[in-house]
Image (tube, rainbow, N blue to C red; front, side):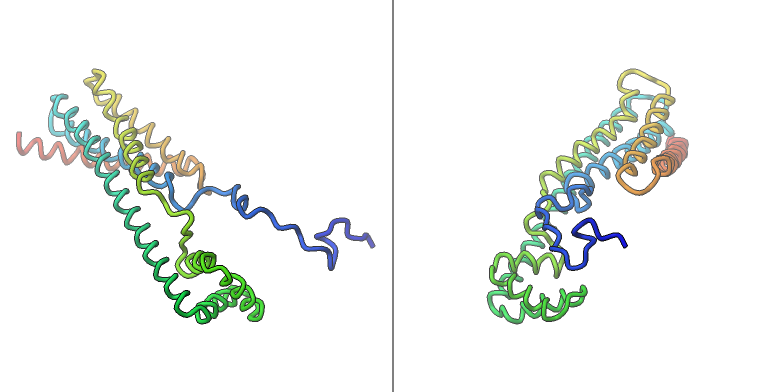
Length: 251
């Protein structure tokens, strides 16, 4: 019989060396927030909303001037709205997390043994033996700050050292929305009077945006591209039809 050739294959071998905690997860995408979510949603919203807005205006009038004005206004209003909304949302989320962390700290300082028992119970629920879980919880609680961090992560899923930045989310949303909204508007601003360049650029951008998003997920790029193309194109087509109906009635 062939003898085990590596420590991890041998029974009773020395424990595998522990990696640096700071490097764990480096190979994974950031799925907790940060800049990615507001940037992706901002670009998609900017492209779809301004494409639909421009098509709706074009359906109601043949004069390019109000279409351009509406497109510029839609870009500015949407970008500011996205930035304000993201800032408020992320700031409120962070404030709530900090409030819960303060509450958890007070509970630990008031009744450390009960909080130790709660933490041990959480470890047991994850498959750790009770004696080991109690010992680990006691070691964690030897440092109150560390105990607060672990309780926050285990009880309500918050990493108090890595809360999302409201300003980063706001700036990401503003810039990405503006870039997305500029794509259907740019052909009109440089002098094209036909809608064909606007439609063509927007459809290509819709497909590219959808494909780009799925490049960091487990979906095929073509699936994400086609999904975004169909949904965004349908929104623009419906808005164009509504604009035509409204323009016909009011004209």
